[in-house]
Image 1: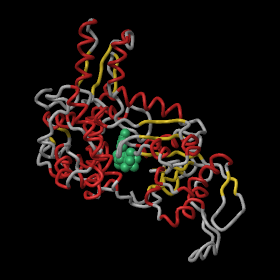
Image 2: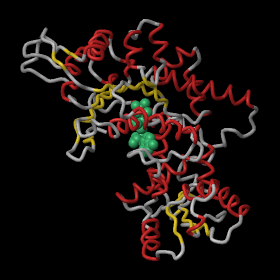
Image 3: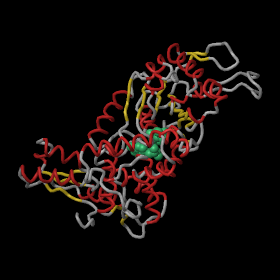
Image 4: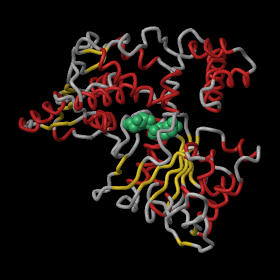
Length: 428
Ligand SMILES: Nc1ncnc2c1ncn2[C@@H]1O[C@H](COP(=O)(O)OP(=O)(O)OP(=O)(O)O)[C@@H](O)[C@H]1O
């Protein structure tokens, strides 16, 4: 294992005593990215919590006599780079949720999905808020109906009302025909309002009415239209602060914040980074030619030690780039451009760590608020532009990647659902 040349591991528990079983459990915990298979005697299957834990962590398990056909099928699947183990969260679209913090979040998600109430999804940029919103929709009774994701920050200011709620012909110059807004287009389904804090006040009022009364009016009409739609909203800014500053309606905040789902930052998700990285690599290999099929030890260490300011989106970008540049079958820390990444906990007292993390949070938050305008960020933080760049370097803030991620591709990204309930994505 230390040499990184294990493709699949088999935990043979047929003749193991309790000590051997718990040692095996520890070994599996320490190597969660490896596809594990387990072999047990029928009478020992899940007989103790330790064995149960091993079976849960295994991609597949077998009892004696081993079904060789199924074993070959499983090995073939693993050999083809398709790691079932990475997708054992049983929430479609959400990969790599073995960390306790992510498991707790997924447990909440499962509970919230069938409930007909708004959910406010919080979390840093790239932490998977939209992925969570889609999962909430996919696990709800509305899954066959449309899922429409709207980036509120990307809507042209003068057209927000019309984009969201539609308009009648002649409502304003250029309104040559009646137009149905995103909410009406999602009738019976779910609307996901990303960056809800960016909604202007008049649109907030219309949204509040929709949430309270279940009705909307198109721009240029006074006729109320009844509408059944579930609203999910996300923010990476502090909405409470926006309320305190009068930029966000308090009554709307309480309406949206009935259920709250917090997506943890990737650096808090111990064990998930490797699973996600392997999943992204496998997915990349299915679509493109790439020799790289796994990560070297140093790469894994770097993946675990990095602070991931851009969260899962940054991990995805780095893995894809590494898969392109890697020369051999193993991706190295250099391929990931993480050669100088130090474990975030190394050589720091907890007070130091708190300071470092507060500084990083402050710079990231400010950068987002200023839409990555460095001069503006420097002005707000009362430091020079050079200092902003220095801090970005110090905290491994990949400005280009974050900028790309921040740049809204379109106001409306998801336009519907296929017959099988899967979302149709546009402009992503
Ligand atoms: N658990 C996950 N499994 C698989 N892919 C994920 C997961 N979480 C995030 N991703 C991927 O990471 C990228 C960013 O995710 P997403 O857009 O949901 O983040 P976000 O929090 O909504 O970002 P932003 O705050 O910038 O809107 C997407 O490509 C998404 O598919």
